[in-house]
Length: 260
Ligand code: ADP
Image (cartoon, rainbow, N blue to C red; front, side, top):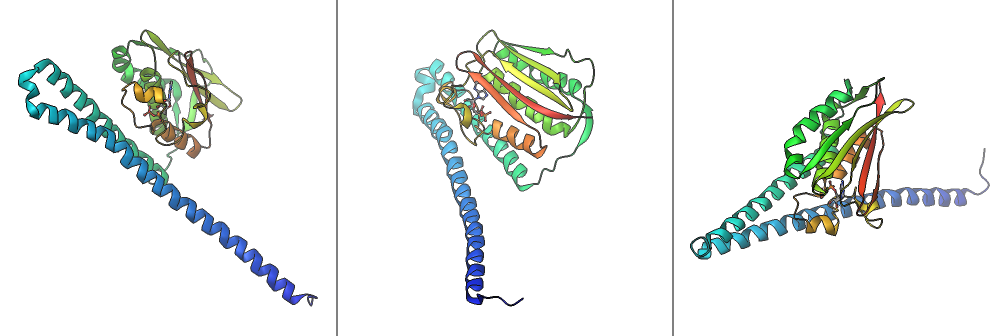
């Protein structure tokens, strides 16, 4: 068929090509922006603990150990806490970059979610006791408890969520893990009666390096990467992660798994 408007056709083709290219260029620009922001976040996050450690060490070198051994001791503890924070950061950055580059593929397997939850709760018992938080597992589910997922990655999800509920819990608080059977999924919920998250910050907590002012002020170690790792893992499973929370009341995180 002969075109009635060959020039118009070529123009249309060129326009379409340009739109295509523009999308490609925009995507590249976005990636570049993302990389720049990620690096600047990382260096920002490293700076604070490094300067803090430097400050404490300076004070100790200036004779604080002889002058005020008690204060010197507390400075040493604070320096150690900041070192902890740095090692958290490195571990989480390593984890998230591996997840994103696809270096950590999802290894689907069949396993019993109840056994895994019990293992994780046991491994976090000491930490919970230190923060005076009671860990409770309501495993009322009598029927199906086998799921199809990457066991080690789901362990990581549980560790991150339960650790958060301990970190952001109030003294004598409680963390409750519950499981529910849905149509073809299992829903796992981790609920706490801790400090909660205000409405304004709630949509942002899964962002990399995002930490609320309140949690920064708590002097609790954290990288701000735990929840973005969780989100990443759940997306890779094509499952969901959700949260509801009220400031001063508590938070409930829930994620789904495929039943097997
Ligand atoms: P972090 O290393 O700071 O714990 P996360 O990515 O795990 O980083 O969480 C991001 C932020 O979301 C936390 O800094 C905290 O402000 C908030 N948050 C996460 N879990 C809870 C929770 N259970 N209760 C209250 N706030 C929470």
